[in-house]
Image 1: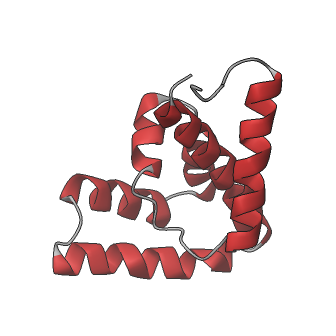
Image 2: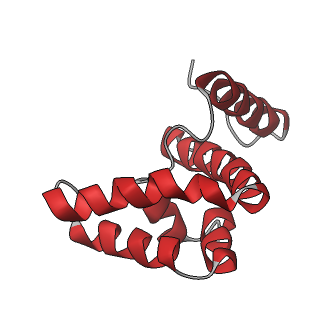
Length: 114
């Protein structure tokens, strides 16, 4: 497994936690909606990503959750440009990143070149 694939697995794990938190408190979507609106207004983000996130954030909650949990290529690409900064604190994020790496190493799916 490449470092890029490791990053994608970590991102999926972080977004799974984000999905749990959003299910419990849909009010958490206000900041990401504001962030995406700013991307659209200022044209600081690729419009494809801004439009996709805007549609998901304004659509049914379960459609958004499905993308956050989807390991597929399109969802992974979207998560590379995530508007959910701040929903998971750095300490939790770092813990999840370590846990994913350790789990993959234990499964023999990731090892750093020595």
